[in-house]
Length: 199
Length: 199
DNA sequence: GCGTCAAGACGGACCGTCTCGTCTCGCAGT
DNA sequence: ACTGCGAGACGAGACGGTCCGTCTTGACGC
Image 1 (tube, each protein chain N blue to C red):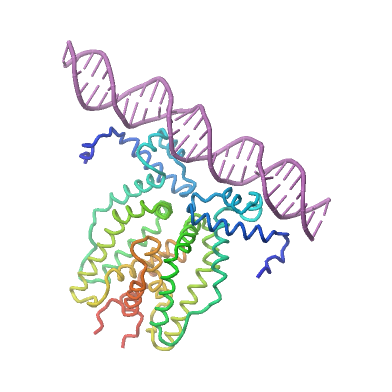
Image 2: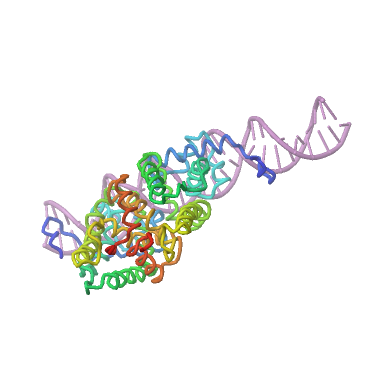
């Protein structure tokens, strides 16, 4: 996908890859605040200037590193749709649970989260490139279910997406409890049925 | 309440206050990563050693500063209970919306969030001292409603709390949209009714 | 020859430790 | 009670170290 290279620079792809890899490794090892550009350059076997030439900050480097990871497996631009909403959502939630329990994913995403909290512009780009797209994919599946009559007509789909997928992310972020398939199931059941007694 | 002085240290309360105030101000002005202990000491009119003597890190200083704020107005250890669950939750959610839109609260809490993401031990202490307590308070209100028959018997209350209060925090954290009373109402309605069509 | 590259020198900001001299406290001994 | 003394905490800041972001050098490739 190097159509962006249509611009100008004679950029060393080998160095670029080495930098992104080193950034990801180091972020996982020492965390975001202790991540230094000097250390990235050293591990990548690269001059500091090569990093400063192409990225404005360590946050941007880490952002690109994680983006490269996420873009690779972003082949699936849609959620499964077997007609059974609950089963489909459960499948996706369980996949998310597995991802969140992967130590590599956990550490690099935590570092990225810090980077996004500190850099508002980068956070906007993240939303534009990833978060919003993922949100739409989930919303699409709910809309399909709504049209099929499996979701009430007056339900706000944005709120619904947040209610189904938010609690898992929150528990991960705050470490307020274990991330298990059972927890995901509980969230899903509660979200689908709501709190009110069903007459 | 100086019964804790029964220990040993002759600690200068004036300096302590000045340090916490300076930390909070600076965190709001420059953000967490650019917050430096030297700057805190300078603004507080205090020697660096006085900070290093009592706190292990800038994260701990900021934690205490925010904790001091939150403890002051923690007089309310319970949610309103008028018998109308939806109205009571709406009241609380609207108060949360106001808080999240306050620039001072926003910036200091964002800095604290970074500190908690970077320091796992501090995050555990935060959960123990604040998050868990607040969670229980909300859960208590839902339990009361459940006993009164306003919430279905088989609803998992932990999941319910997450579903009602989580989306607002998520939107704040990721800046994925405006924090409005209307959004809070939508979340609340969706959570209470669930997604399924109500025959 | 022009731009990128690895390497690293450079002044500056903060780090965390330390050493000063000052002060306030609590506890003698008188 | 008055006084003298040791223990800490205090403000201030010097210190070596790390990393910052910029700049320079010389080699390499287009």
